[in-house]
Length: 474
Image 1: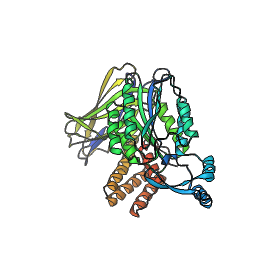
Image 2 (image 1 turned 180 degrees about the vertical axis):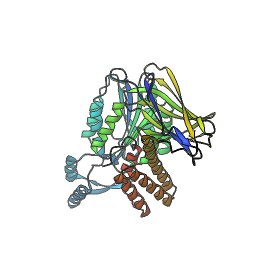
Image 3 (image 1 turned 60 degrees about the vertical axis):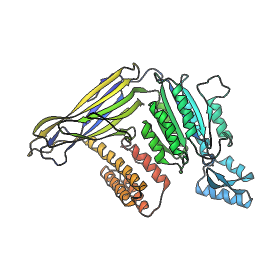
Image 4 (image 1 turned 90 degrees about the vertical axis):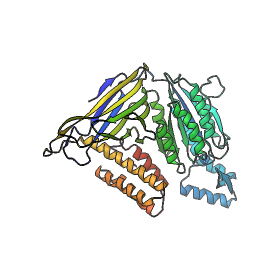
């Protein structure tokens, strides 16, 4: 049953209220949620959003399918208008002359598509919202600074220039992000954190070359408790790096392979900014009567295994960050139980602390996890089927993550085992199509083949497995 405290509505749902004495490896699983109790002020909270836009050589390439690319290459070769050039630290073939003009007239680059989507989404910003645009490639540059409203350029004008002029902005061909992240950190720190939602959005289609330096700069943003959302377009970006950024800051990661996906992802992100219900959420849990906190994970709006877990006395703590959007946040905790005598027991506590978005008042609530231990000859207790299903979905995500980590360390056999484990669970959940994709991933790994689109779409889909309960991936 949900209860309201300030701007937030809370609900705690254990998977069972009782266990039978002598149960092997007994555990209690707890699904709990924090969501907005009511809409915020009219028009929502003002926001400061900074977009880091990849402007490297690869993102400027026209988006062509294999047949289109082959046809244009053949035409260019016949006209002697095909040449090899260095772009983004790789050798690529460039179509020049008349053929290049004809090709550009019939196709768009990923950069142009992203700029068009940003223009459409940013048109819905309110007068007190601030939006800044920073481009990055070999070097970084501020393309639009929304904090200075008296400038001669407008955000719409800059985005249209990107769509119309393939040479703008001229920042080089490589994909270096650290300098852009440093500029963004300074901008965000100059904006007030009270009464305003601050967000960084990174959009890229390639491999970030200065990952270590970029993470170091992004730590400044993380220290300000600002979420970073990452959007990968195309097939060549490093989804693990982008997901790591999102997870470590409390943001979201998206795969956007089509123009429609790019626009929908941006629309969802911009649309969530105004509906702020809680700031600085911290979740703490501890076991009692010999019980132990086995795990805390986020299951919605995206699944997330926390990179940083603190111990504060006998409490296990994780930082959730701010809660924006209408769906709130859903979490899943597990308590491993000791042998318990017959009777009622308080086996754990969950404590949630946050500040109200409207009043900034500090809030705290504590939930006691109780279980009734029944005699050994008792019938098996009822299990909440929705909580059990959510646990199975979390297990799919954990198996996919374990497979990725095993693959990175060269343990391909272990990776295939975990992928097939995920497939088995998905079949039990009634998702045979998704299960088959995991089976194919395992087979490809064994034969050392890769399907970039399937890999990226699966990783994107499995992160949203809790909210996609009624859907199958396309």
